[in-house]
Amino acid sequence: MSISTLGARLRSLSFVGLLSLVALPMAAQAPSTMGLQRDPRIAAALADVSPARLRALDSVLVSFGTRHTMSDTVSSTRGVGAARRWIYSQLQQYSRDCGGCLKVEYDTGTAVITRHIERPRWPIVNVVAWLPGKDPNRVIVMGGHFDSCVCSSPNPMDATGDAPGADDDGSGTVAVMELARVVGKHFPQGLDATIAFVLYTGEEQGLLGSTQFAERLQREGKTVTAAFTDDIIGNVVADDGRVDSTSVRVFAVDSLAVGGGELARYVWAVGAVYQPDFEVLPVLRLDRLGRGGDHAPFHRFGIPALRFSERLENYKRQHLVTDTFEHVNFGYIAKVARLNLATVVSLAAAPSRPVRTAYGRDRESGGQSFNIRWDTVPGVIAYELLVRRTTAPTYTRIVPTGNVTTFLLDEQLDDVWVGVRAVGPNGHRSLTTVVGAPNGPRLPNPPRTPQP
Image (cartoon, rainbow, N blue to C red; front, side, top):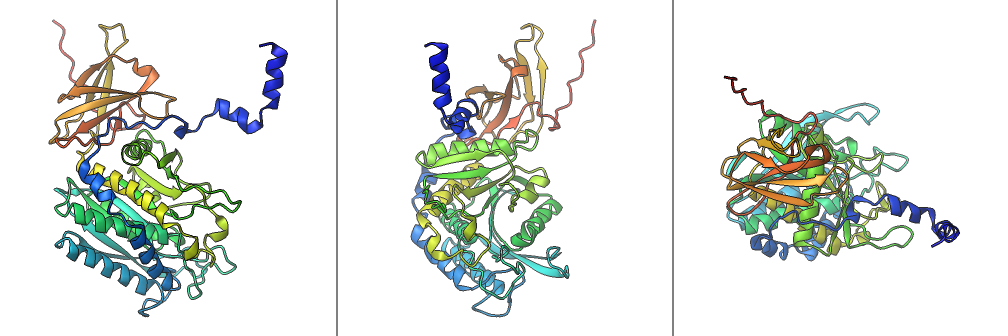
């Protein structure tokens, strides 16, 4: 091809087309299962997630008129108080249905509403359903916020007018409620880790409920494996008419030390295993530009945290009275909920990940291999090292090491990222810990052998 012909073809490309040649998004790489195995128990549970039940639950939520954090708490039919009591009663019924497997409670506290001109101190009441695991101190958090608002209206602190919040975040609330029901039904004895299904309030006033719950877990000395939030997961039609009911965005900070990016890669892999036709689009930032969600307080505590959000948002129906029931697609919510379930149960069934790592250049190979070390994880049968180039979206090589905590890896560690994970007796894999992550926990160096 001549230079002039090539130039003409390049000029015919749109600017967006040119960008696509040089800057592929993370999900442009074919999804990788990262060696995760399909669990038939999880597959059976996914089939039990019901769009009809999600629709019925959201219909009741919207019927409370407003769920503003500062709205009526006395009425039995309107306001945030009626909504939380109904949520609590539903979760209690789910617990009775599974033989008392769920421990349902109110998580209470107070917070200053800094976005209100008078800055009042206000009660914050979350609703939590715990599915206890073998380890009561290792927790996975799955949340959504049930409060609503008309924050984009002329009176953003209106606590009396209608604020239906069918999508924001009725969609996430009903997904978490359905997850509590289905996971309790299929895993009534619990899993290795404890799962907290949390319905937060105060999100629209500055993530107050999730901050309260994250602080509580810190005070109680819990080890949080991961924290997820479902927030705005029900819209599939954009304002310009585009439709997308086959993909979902997951937001997480790609901090090597914290592990948010590792969590996003895990969700991406779980999706490839259990719902290959539902595309997971990892977005490696905390949230959409200028927005926030209930995973953020956990990220600030150094916990891997991730937000699920619909692919197509319509800001003409957020924080407004137009966020109504008829615009919510419950088949789509069910797909997101199934991805939630497969992820949360897989993590809860897996061992904890190694906390500390270390590496050393191997002199005998001339520096072409590295000795990798990591902490022992109780109850595992093996470990695996995962390798990716520093520019690769996800891992492309899996190296089984056996049940050891030191391994000579034939990789030039200068050029790649390596993660280590634990494998449990049931075949479930933990999250990866990045070896040598900047500011990450390090194993101490072994004592030097005295020279003769």
